[in-house]
Length: 435
Ligand code: S3P
Image (cartoon, rainbow, N blue to C red):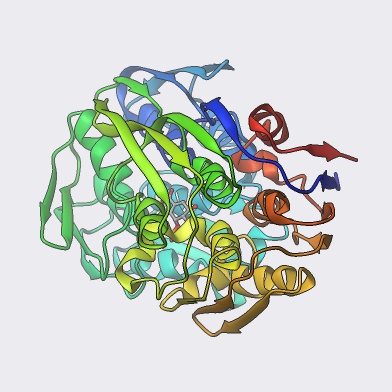
């Protein structure tokens, strides 16, 4: 299972690339397609391990699903009340999205379920969903400190609530909205900062009324979803590695096609532009309720910035690669208000700081962010990704500015979000070999 990348130093990124489908939208296509009435046909589905964990879970609950076959998936929805008790615990693998969103959806079922996952997921906080779901009347048992596995028991009925989230989390918001589909009355969720709204958009596309007033989003329970066609755009979080790589590597000129540019996800574009990046959004269009564009990236010298805190939730998965951008920028970059990074697939503040220091970059972690002093080049070295897919890919991109090869350990989990990463990377000019 352990997998090592060895990435040759230098080079530039050129050509045209469509990265795999959006992870968040792929998860939701299965979950909402499963509880809709009628058929949902998905194209561009991300065949990564995380979305496949969600798919297996719904198959285990009796939902007929065909595929994936080159990004095509067909789901025969069983309706809001049509899921069946699975024979065993549902294994969410490495995927926090599967566990958190499903906990909301399963809290309203008439059967018991257990949600479990791999060693990384077993360390991630679930109290943030279990507590408000309990306030809706759900019966959820967590391990001490709110850790997985989660044991969910059936209850007579869930009640809608009015909940203000203490952390800006689309996973928590989505879990509560999904529970809200099963609840009596209205479920209202207020977010402290804007977070990704794919759940709301897809519910709308399936004919379910979702209201938004300012920072509050609400659903009324016991409605109906109708199966629909879903075209999953390329994942901006995967495209981000190449946006930064092309920005950092002299001579680069790269076109990333069909990228999802939902405004709740484009923090990476805004932050890179503030740093001086040359990014152009071309051919903007809307596909199934989600904005999409092609993104042209040309090399440009980057400079350090204080990252505006309101952009943090809009780029929450992109900080590992943004730290690499900061390392290659002139001057100092300061990230604050990003404590959430400490409870992702790894502690992304600490693990990135450790890796950057191995490359001789001055990186000072803080409780909620990092201060990075940029430099033009760095030597190579051996980096431990701690099994975190985005850390592994970030240091692969860092090789574009290295003077010797970068070796990255424990890269198997890249397949959770970006199957075929090395082939894509090599196609546009990185030189990644595996061992
Ligand atoms: C996701 C939301 C984010 C993100 C994760 C996917 C989603 O988590 O980090 O990769 O699909 O809703 P939080 O909302 O908990 O920050």
